[in-house]
Length: 71
Image (cartoon, rainbow, N blue to C red; front, side):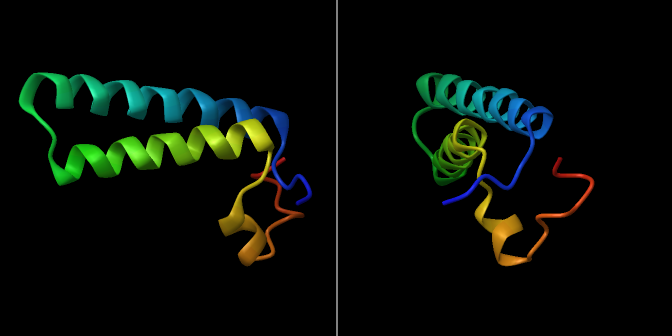
């Protein structure tokens, strides 16, 4: 698995993923678990994982390695 996103993009993914994860966890603690909150938690965890590993499977599948946006 080679890196296909840049440092700036990685930091944005980590920050956004942690925000989604914190929001969904707080919402589940207050209102109980729902499918929407669980989905947001999984999406946030996925974005954090992408940021930590510098690898995006969607960008890899679409061959966006040379994209200016991802670097």
